Image (cartoon, rainbow, N blue to C red; front, side):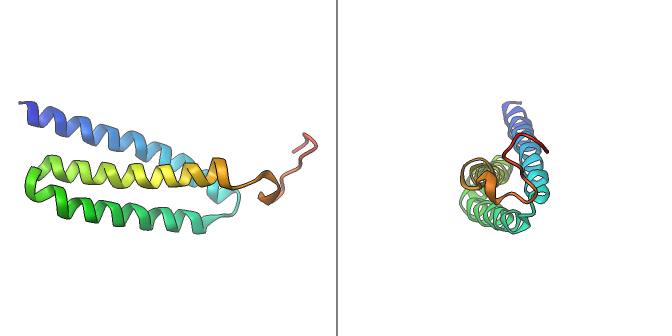
Length: 101
């Protein structure tokens, strides 16, 4: 049935964003910025929770899968933004700008 294929599709997208989120987590741990991971998790829980309240009553399992996906996308996007845009190389511990590690 169409409903099951959409459910599997949404859960698969959730796994893809979870993988991106895990890579960003590793990078943030490596540059000693675990507080960003905390804020990211807080965003994921908040977005997923609010989306669940709105989507599950109307769309059941599809709403639940969509809620998880929205939370994961929000968290992964926040981490990527902070990791690639906000943090500057001179703020990274043990970073050398002369090309040597």
